[in-house]
Image 1 (cartoon, rainbow, N blue to C red):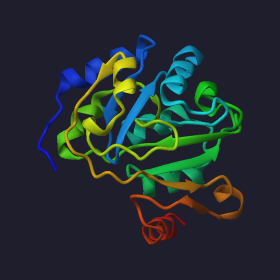
Image 2 (image 1 turned 30 degrees about the horizontal axis):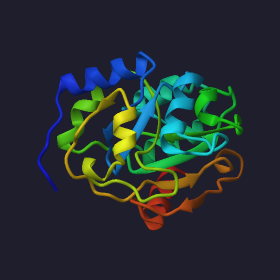
Image 3 (image 1 turned 180 degrees about the horizontal axis):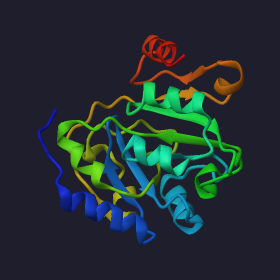
Amino acid sequence: MSSVSLDSDDAARLQACVAGGGVAVYPTDTVYGVCCDPESETAARKLYALKGRPAARPAAVMFFSLDAALEALPELHESERSALSALLPGPLTLLLANRSRRFAAACRTDPDTIGLRVPRLPESLVALAAVAVPVMQSSANLSGEPDARTLAEVPQSLCEGAELVIDGGELPGVASTVLDLRDWDEHRRWLVLREGALPSTAVEEALEAAL
């Protein structure tokens, strides 16, 4: 993979773009993503239009540190916090009970569920840890099309429609594993809905350690 490294200016530009209601294309620990303010319905509609994503389909909310995520979601139960601490940061999207119905623009027609991402940033992208706001994010592709490993693979129309585009070089290229933890607190049940960058066996080991 290429050796492009981001710096504090990239983090500042990403935060300013999101805070200003813009849409940004940016690198993650898995594939290229597109993001906006998870509290802004206007920005969410623009992001969905650029992707051609069905308006009812939820998107994840990404925090750039686990501490920030835990602080922003005080209603999480202790068992859920233990599970998050065992799994994150990492290439996972966790479905959790959204008891306070936060981030409505991202949750769409399922306000009782939040999809949470906290990336494990490689050294080349670690500067993004300075982004202090959460972002609503999805993969930087047209809905249903392949994920982008490089910026060149991001559709031109998406890059042209975004207010900010950040090149992070070549990424691993495998999307996050989607893990349903909505029954974890009450029943200690979990379900992998999509196996991606983190194998199910690694998920199981981490959750056993959280018990």
